[in-house]
Amino acid sequence: MRVITEFDPWGDPLCTCPRKYSLNPYTGCQHHCLYCYITSYIPRAFNCRPKRDLLARIRAELPKLDRRLPVSLSNSSDPYPPMEGRLHLTRKCLQALAQAGFAVQIITKSNLVVGDLDLLEGMRAVVSFTLTTLNRQLASKLEPRAPAPAERLRAIQAVSSRGIPVTVRLDPLFPGLNEEEIEEIVGAAAGAGAVHITASTFKPRPDAWQRMMLAFPEFCQRTRELYYREGERHGRARYLPLSLRRRLLLRVREACERFGLTFSTCREGLKELNTSPSCDGTHLLSSSFARRTASLSHSNRPS
Picture (spheres, rainbow, N blue to C red):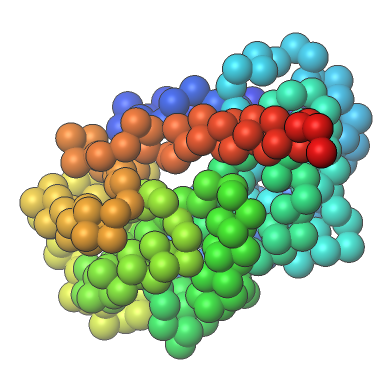
C-alpha cells in the first residue's frame, strides 16, 4: 500500500483542489477536535501513531511520482503532533521531498512547524494553519489538545516573517458559535502575515454530531433543524441550507477583501465566491519559488 497517493477525497465532485499528492506521516491525530471527520474512516483516530517503515517506503515511491505536483502534509492527520518533537518523522519526510525536488503544502494546527523553517525556506512551500476561533475557552472545548489560537498566530507570524507564504483555514464555521468572530479572525490572520483564507462550514458526520451534542447541546438543538430538515445530505455529511452557507461565506470574503487577502471556499459548491487561483492556496507555491530564486540569486552575487 502506497504512502504517497494522489489527493482524491472520495471522488467528491464538490472538491475543487488542484491535483496534488497526499502524505500522512502519522495515522490518526492527537488534537481530539470534536468536529473531525477522520473518525468516520480511521480506526482509533484519536490515537496518533507513526507509520511503519515510512522513510524507506517514501524513498521507493518518490522516483515514480510526478515532480510537477506538490505533496500535501497532511489531509487525514496533523504532520506535527506532540511526538514529532522527538521522532522528527515529518522533518525526515521533508528532507526526502526536498532532495527529490518536490514542492510541499503543510496543513497544521501546530506551532511545531516553526522548527522546520530551515528546511521549508529552501523549498517551494506553503503553510496552512487552521484557525477556528480566537477564544481560548471555546478552542479548548472544540480542539481540546491542539495548540491555543495565540500560539498558532505566533507561528503564522514566524513562518510568514521568513518569506514563506501562509494561508489560514477558517474551518469549520459554526452558525451561532464562531460566526461572530469572522472579521476578528480574518484581521488577526492578516496581521500575523497570512495572505489567503480558505473557509468551510461545519459538515457533520454522525460521529462528529454526537461529540458536538455532548459538548455543545444548545448549539445542536438550535441547528438540528437546519442540518437535518432544511439542509441537505452529501455522502455521509450533513450540509447547512445553501442560502445560509452563502451568507456565512460571503462575510468571510468581504472581511478578506477589507484586509487585502484572497479567499476561497472548500467543498461548498460555491466556487463562484472564490477570489484566488486555487482553493487550497497551492497557487502561492509560485511566489514561494520566486522568493527562493531571488534568495539564491542574491547569495550567489559576488561580494
